Amino acid sequence: MTDFTDLTLDELRLALAPAVAESAIFDGWSEAAVRSAAESVGANPDVAMLAYPGGAMDMIGAWIASVDAAMVAAFPPERIAAMKIRERIRALVGFRLDAMVGNEEALRRALAIMAMPHNAARSLRMGWNSADVMWRLAGDTATDYNHYTKRTILASIYAATLAVFVGDESEGKADTLAFLDRRIDGIMRFEQAKAKWLNPERESFSVTRFLGRLRYPAR
Image 1 (cartoon, one colour):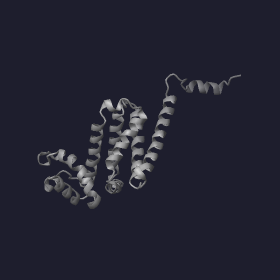
Image 2: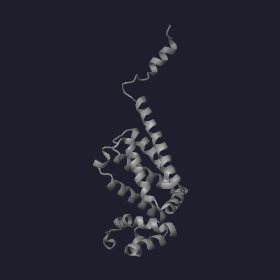
Image 3: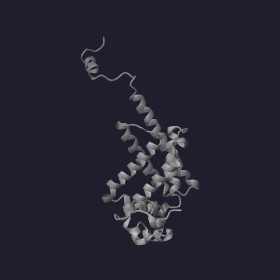
């Protein structure tokens, strides 16, 4: 059990985040939520407030970071090694969704705050970072433009899945999982098509040869 009385502010911010999310169901992402969360775990409420100087976005960011950290801990290399890429991404996103079950209202309020224009840039960075963590856990080592396209696509799919998740009342979130599966299938088809197009063994397109054929068409 975590001793909240002997943590640095950075440690407290992350450790307290899940409790803040639970309190946000009733109090919103507010000072009241932080104080309520601190009292529930035996932390000093005044010190806890210092851990979130940026207000609601700091609280939400810490919650997301706590889910990232829990996901990393839950998927050591030996667990994920035997999975195919599609299964890895599905399992990682599924873990994140499971971590938020019961906190749908807190998530709904968080998404509304993150969608505000003045929070857009930071929200995009949060989504990008979570997508980066997932791809790294999945074993992606791309450093070229693939690095960016994979993360951009996964971040957008994850965001869309969360939007479905918050309003999903189906048994076991079946509608959300079906939505996620369709989107992951789309990623896999895109990656397969891209790999085929970029296959170094395929005949490359030559502008010079193409123009030459226009000028001197085959007889």
